[in-house]
Image (cartoon, rainbow, N blue to C red):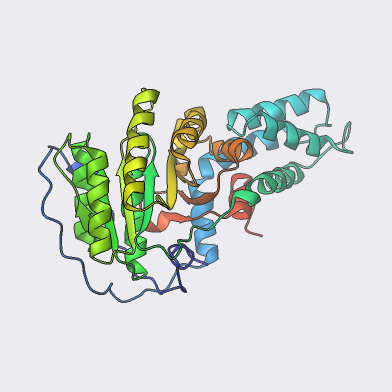
Length: 358
């Protein structure tokens, strides 16, 4: 089932359209005053056929190819025509750690591989299957499709460090939601970066979503408050609130997010209805630290991991799932909107192990 049909569903799935291409971030050169919000289109354009599961698995495998080549190439080298002994198991653990799978996961896989096979030859393909099975066991419990409830507007607070792809992900999610027929609004509450404000305005213009923004340096919490009031007044279905992410100053981050959340609750006691953390897979172990801090600060309800195609350490998603048990809603393996898809634990496990689709 495609991302378009699984996400942003309230009372039943709606058909999807082919989403517009993302705006080029590098084209934003100078800070500019935010333009007036564009008019919201009454109806989304005609629907297009969703991508097949096999098509997405091919894209996923290609996106995770750096990670899978790193792992499977080493597995083949370690286990071809060799008996399983202490040295080969140590080599396997080292490979898994280098892929950022984390020590608990690495130890689990090594134990599964060694069970009943010590001092015997083992086919590298069997090791890959064991790897995929153990990874899937950890990831399956956090494979949680993103849905939203009856609240209107449904308020989504999006957090993450600068550079993780947070604003771009908001634009993609908004585009998908618009394609499903939902009325969308963006609140550009990362008021410290003119580029982030402009980027959301570009996305809003492309997809027909209203954008609430103010000049650089404006009060983010005040903007969030006004955006919720406006979203209520004009019948918005989904309100995305972008936020600043400065991990190097934890106290400032905590204070800023805490203030935004308090102000949101003044408008809607039950909000934010979802807090999505966007993590960049290329940051490796830093993503683990980010998950830790943002979970404590913002009460993260779900995770989206981006840029898995840009790293050989895609195993970091497994390590995060193992430690934090945060629901994983979607992953990104490229720049296009269709490269952001609902998380499939078994598909991810098989792709990172270099196996074909089950």
